[in-house]
Image 1 (cartoon, protein in one colour):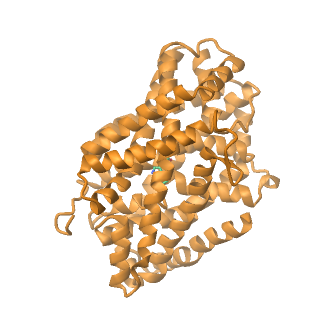
Image 2 (spheres, protein in one colour):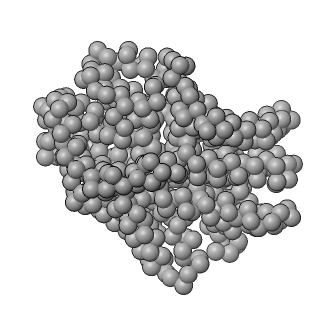
Image 3 (tube, helix red, strand yellow):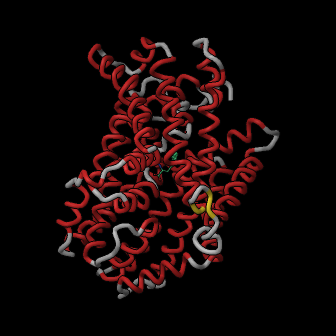
Length: 446
Ligand code: TRP
C-alpha cells in the first residue's frame, strides 16, 4: 500500500476497540488463571503487574509509534525507519520474527479455540448439569483423549478465522467487539458473584493478592513477563501493524493506558471467578491448560440458569478468541500477499492451512503424540514456551531499544506529547528500566 492511500482508523474509539479485541482473548481468561495457579499465586500476579506497567506499557507505545511512523507492515516499517536514521535495514528482523511468532502462536491458540467451541456445544446439551468435579474432569479428559474431536474443533475454529480474514472484514468487527466484550465482562462478574456464594472467596483473594515471596524464582518471573507480552499482543508486530493505521492526533500514552487497564481488569476478574471454584471443590491449583474447563462448567452445572449462562459464556469466549486469532493471522497474510503473486484469498488460504497443519501437531500432543518431546516439551508446550517466554520478549526488547536508542529522541518526545518531567520519565523507563528488566529476567531464569 502506498503511503498516501494507507487507510486510517475512523476514530480513537475504533482503534481502542480493535486493539482491545486483539489483546483480550484466551490469554486473559484461559491462560492467565492457570499460570497463576501453576506459579503459586500472588507473587506471580505481582510480578505480572509490574511487567505490564514497566515493560508492557512502554513496549506497546513503542510498537504503535513504529507503526505510525513507518506507515507500512512491520517488516517494511522497521527497515524504512532504520534506513531513515542511517541504520542498517537488518532491523527488519524485528518485523519478520514477529510474523513467524504470530504463525506459531495461532497454531496452538486455535486448538484452545476449538475447546471453547466444544464447550459451547456441551453447555447446550446440558453436559454440565448436576455434575460433580469428577464428572466434569471426565468430560475434559474425554475430550483431550479424542483426537478426532480436537481436530474437528480446531478445524472449525481455523475455518472461521480464515473466512473472516479472507474477506478482509477484520475492521468491520469493531461493532461486535463493542457489544460482545462488555457482555463477556458481565458474565465474568456473574461468575465472581457465584464465587462469593461458595464460601471460598476470601481464600481465592488471598491466593491472588497476598504474596508468598518464597514462591518466586527465575522461572516464575520469566513466566510472568512472557504472559505480560502475550496478553497485550506484544512482540509480534501486531500492534505495529495496528499503529500504522493510527491518526497523528491520537495520544499514544493515554490510549495505551486505556487498553492496558481493560486487558488487566479482564484477567484479574477471570482469576477471581475461577479460584473460589477451585478451592470450594478441592481441585488442583496446578491443573494447567484445563483449569477453566474443569472449574467453570462446575459453576454452570450447579447454578440456576447455568445452561444458558454457560452457553453464553463459552460463545463469548469463542468470540474473544476469534478477534485475537484474526489479529494473529492478519500479519501473516499481509506478508504472504506482499511477497507472492497470490491474491488476498489465496494468501489467506496458504497462511491459514499452514497454521492449521501445525495446530494438528499441537493437538496430538494431548493424546497420540504425548510422548513426542522437543527439548523436553510436548509439541503444544514447546510452541507456547518458545513464543511466550522467548520470541515475544526478545522481539519486544528490540522494538523498545529501537525507539529509545535509535530513533531521534526529540522527535519521539514530541510525538508522545511529553513535557520536561514526562520526557525524563519516558527516557528512564524506555532506555533503562524496560530493556534492563527484560534482560535481567532472562538472565535470572537461566
Ligand atoms: N493477546 C491475545 C490474548 O490474550 C493473544 C494474542 C493476539 C497475541 N495477538 C497476539 C499474543 C500477538 C501475542 C502476540 O488472548
